[in-house]
Image (cartoon, rainbow, N blue to C red; front, side):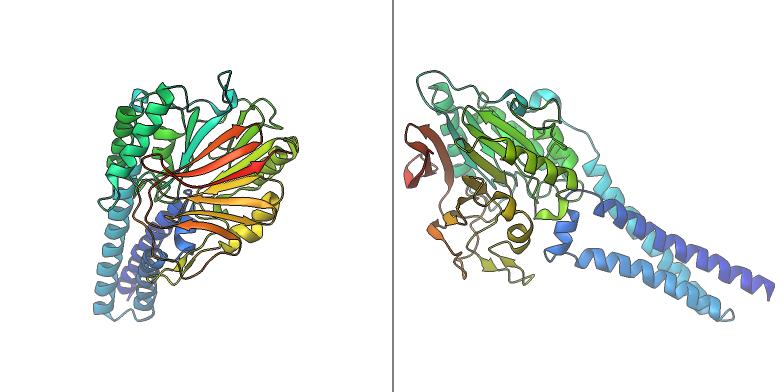
Amino acid sequence: MHIVIGKARRVIVIGLAAFCAVAALSVWLFTRPGTIGLYRWGYGTPFIALLGLGAAALAIAIASARFPAAKALRVVSVVVSCLVVVLAAGVGGFIAANAYGRLPPAAARPVLPDPAAGIAVPPGRGLRVALSSDPHFDRDLSAHDARRRILRLAQEERDRGELDAFFMLGDFVEQGFMASGWDVVQSEVRELAPRVPFYALMGNHDAMLGGARRWLSALGVEPGRPASGEASARPSPYMWRVNAGTVHFIAVDLPWGPEDLSKAERAWLEDQLASIPAADFTVVLSHSFFYCSGYVDESTGMPWFDHADNLRLVAPMLAGRADLVVSGHNHYMEWIEADGTAWAIVGAMGGKPDPEPTHVSPGSVWFARGEYGRLVLELEPDGLHCSFEDDDGETLFERTLAAD
């Protein structure tokens, strides 16, 4: 009997090891940027299944201890527990080997200015910058030719002295933890736009399964000294402010939504908004949208329009204080006017167009699906001129935010 009980205890230990392996992998994943959003936005089944397998292994082990004479149940328990350990080790090892594998040399990075240095505009003209999002460089279904035209156009304008910077708002790659996608991003940008200053945000795909490390290596700028005019140093590499005379750009850490926006980041955002003179222009940048027309995703049932959490938890900080909020995430172009602020969607740098909208956002003024291009902001005497352009630089829609 003593021998049987000893075997039952060993079975429980093995089952507990299986559960701990799964739990450790889950804890690691959920402490990586973007994973909570991935779970909340309808992609939680693999996480639940993994935890369920660990719990099942432990439950079978405990059951075998209650029936010490059931030798077959102990065998099943050990087999199941070992399979779960192998699965957790395999999945974790695959993700870690990619997310924490080799990084390209610093020389492979595009031109990435320190946000604290600001943008110096040449005399004789106003600030002129371009913005776009969701290129998905490594996805087969992306419009690669359109993306390349956008990059070439930016370089041509930069060489003529007509473009001061390019803001890319996230989703550079399909799966952020894979090195191959980032190799494509860096090589193509260095080839087609080697002298264009880029400022980057991290999208939900970029952050996927530990991808933040690769995003930081490829495009991130670590927090440093406060920019001129900033109330405080930025709290993370995902939040920054760039001053360009009377135009101020503030990046917000919202890859899926506010899941990753820390208390320190919220306080920093509030400080920056409060420090900008009312007569200046404030442009807030985010990957995930606030107001946006859209659709209900067939596979998850989630509403990809008018982001409820962003509108409830973050938008009140911006509405009426930011002149313009520019986002990607949905693969459309759209101009919305609501709550005393203009909201622009520019997920048009090559990602496959999203479905035709079934919901039109209140305040939507102009909308385009299936167009690739960018949003160009130009400071003029009468205000900040905002122009959606296609990938050849032809104007699709324009609006001017009046100067105070």
